[in-house]
Structure formats: C-alpha cells, structure tokens
Image (cartoon, rainbow, N blue to C red; front, side):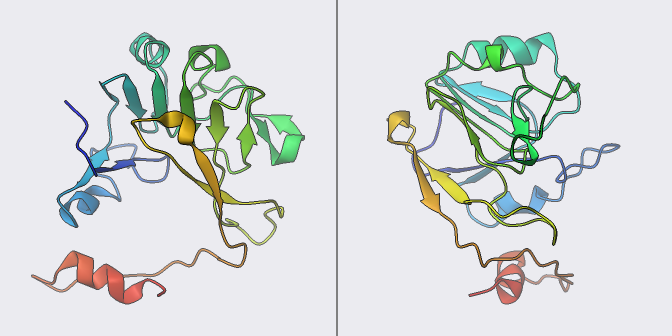
Length: 188
C-alpha cells in the first residue's frame, strides 16, 4: 500500500474497538470523505508503520516497529511517565519498549494522557488534548503536525485549555447522511 497525497490517517485507539468483535466506534469515519483511511490493524508502507491499539504485542509488531522510520501508534511506551512523573506506564502487555522505537526519525503515540517528549525529541507522546475527567491535572496541551515528506518539521500546536470533552448521543435516521448528522452536534 502506498501513502496517498493529502490522505488523513485515523488509527484506532483503546476505546474505539470492541474487544470481542471486529466492530469499532470509528468504522463510519472513512465514509465521510474519500481521503480518510481508518486503520484497525497494523500496516507498514514507505518506511511508515501505523499501529492501532492492540492488547498484546507480538514479534511481528516488534519487527515492523524496529524497521520503520516513522511510527504512528496508539500504544503507550513502557518508560513513559504517567500522572506527570509520579509513576511509569510499566511492563504492560500492550506497552512498547522504548528500544523498539528509539531508532526512528519520528514516533508519535497516544494512549497515555500525559504529554511526554524523549531527550532527543524524536519520540512524542501527545497526551490527551483535553481534560478527560474533572480531576485531570492541568498541563500544557498540544496537538502535533508534520508532513510525511519531512518528519523533522514536526511541530506542537497549542490546544485551547478551555475545551472540555462532552458526550453526545446521536441518532441517525434511515438514509440520513452521517457526515451531516455529526456536524449538527459538533461545536462550531
């Protein structure tokens, strides 16, 4: 598979997938626009490895991660500090050892809500861009942006700290356009 110019990649996270079926909460997203690609399984192409959340890592995951120049994954990293340094993510069955990704030009990962950047700046845990519960600690929140042509142009952009996650129940009527239904409930 070759990367498409202008494509938007969506990597399934830990809360996007049903552990007992192949259904995800984001299956519909690739129907919104033609240039959106949703990944629920690991894919590698053009030196890029996309790793959606998986409960257990395998030797195949290790091989693909160690062979990639750019890694975009939802997995957490073993050595990543949690709770602003109070403890580490640790040796969970879903945690990637730092040694699997430290060779990369750029690794961006999620899963961990606290932002973190390694000493050499090539591994970034974006953290949650918004507080996920009322007692979530205050910290600088960002979103990341870069181009596949030059991952060294990676930039963290400030995310407004006033944003709060809200849950909406959305009922989609038969034959209603999903994109239009979603746009109705999103903040402007």
